[in-house]
Amino acid sequence: MARTKKNRLIQMAPHFSGFKPQGLQHKPNVEVLINFEEYEALKLCDYEFLTQAEAADLMLISRPTFTRIYESVRRKIAKAFIEGALIVFEGGNVDVAHWYKCAECDITFTLIDDSVQCCPLCKSTEIKLNN
Image 1 (spheres, helix red, strand yellow):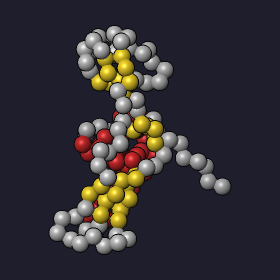
Image 2: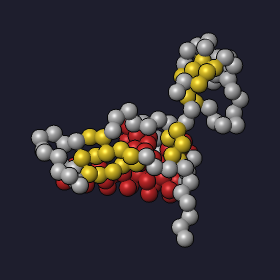
Image 3: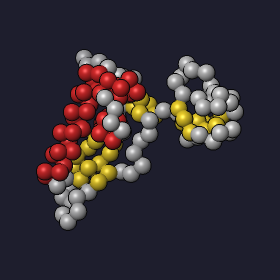
Image 4: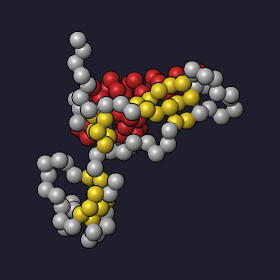
């Protein structure tokens, strides 16, 4: 029996549902499904330029697990580009980080679960959940 997958921490789910190729009619059953942890891995490495070790730490997973997720999403995107397939984002085993807003300095930030509940910039305890 397979072990259940541990949830991966993502900062934010994508604010769009996918991509479709321009200039082609959409063919049914020609879709590439990318789950949220794959999206997050791609964003952290290729958009935010973090190392795989840094990105794995942010997602609370091991570096080898991160590498498998990252390679999977890159293969899927290559397939979608070559075949002209629709890219669709779907769920996955994820926990979305909670975002807070400081009432004093107006910044938005996340907190680690066991950290002190205060603003990292001005140290104010007047913070509210900003989801």
